[in-house]
Image (cartoon, rainbow, N blue to C red; front, side):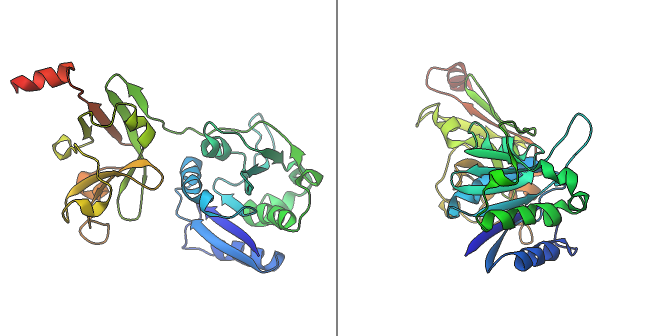
Amino acid sequence: MQIVTLTSDTGLQDYYVAAMKGAILNQMQQPTIIDISHNIRPFDVANAAFQLRCCYQDFPKGTIHIIGVDSEPILTGEKVSFPTIMLFRGQFFISNDNGFFGCFLDEEHPDELYQFTDILNHPEMVKFPTKNCFIPLAKRIAAGESIGSFANPTTGYKRAFMQKPVIEHLIIRGNVIHIDGYGNLITNISKSDFDRFGEKTPFTIKYLNKEYYIDEINETYNNVTMGERVALFNSSELLEIAINRGANGSTGGANKLFGMRQGDPVHIEFTPKGSKEDFDSLFD
């Protein structure tokens, strides 16, 4: 059984996802097709990398991930980008070399990396490349062909812009990098960033509307009453700001209630005992 995942920016309104799945079913023996997301913002490879990074470890070795976000290769000029295959921790990732790999890997490195330069001899693959190029490459991998027999080893890959938190003295300056279907605000502030300041150091999480600050981290949403704001580290150990039982389509998620959008700032200010901020609070 070959597991193939699909991530794209095509949306679900048109025939594109059906065409991709039909091509997989037509070219592979009994594949299992898993949708990661087809609602990636157009050309937002950083968000595609975020989505894959949060779930790839839940798949078994040998899984093939096809990333159809900003998928059309650039075959002329200075900014050439070829279809690229990455082997990482026993799984395969097929994407245009558009910055996805750099965002996905962050500080890590691929186990193996290959460019499919032979697309220059197959102009028919350039149109709808996710279907006409990436899926045929996945077919060859699933059939057990050596990737080196049809693609060229490489070490270089592009890195799309990815917002990273800035850690200063007693403050972490982060951003909302994703808003999920519930309207929860997922930031780029990790638990390891937070833990640098000590387990019991007082802090305040501030965002767009400073009246809605949060000064504690909870383990689950239900640790606070329904409708109350809550901050927690999610399963990917990223800081998340939410409304318990609040969701888009019902009472409204944190994004709507706080007027927050992807890219907006989220800051954590720490006030350890003896700091200027802690001293000033005595006179409030």
